Image 1: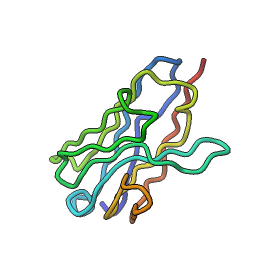
Image 2: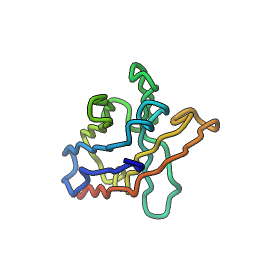
Image 3: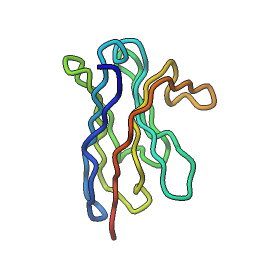
Image 4: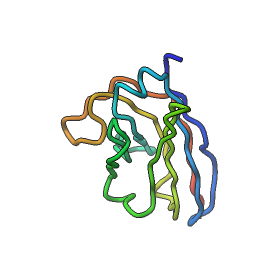
Length: 123
C-alpha cells in the first residue's frame, strides 16, 4: 500500500457524530506522524488533529478540542478521527496526512495526502 485512504465521511445533523478512518502503508504509518486536515468551502486547508509517531501524544486544533478524538490501530496501520458534537462549521473535506511534522504549526511538513472524505453537517 503506497497511499493514504480515508473513509467514514457522510452527512449528519448538528450534534451528531462521525468516525473517520485512514489506512496507510505500513512504512508510512511507522515512519511519520499522521493526522487530519480539513478544507471547507471558501477557506484554506487547516490542521485538525494528529498523533506523535509513537501514538502517545495527540495534538488538536483549538476549535475541536473536547469534541474530536484521534486514535490508531497499529496492527491495521490505521488512524481514526472520532468527531462528536458536530456543527455546520465542521463541514469540510477531511484529508488524512502523514509527514515528519503534522500539527506542529508553521513547522509542519506533510509528505503524503489522502484524497479526502466529505463531512457535511446540517442544521
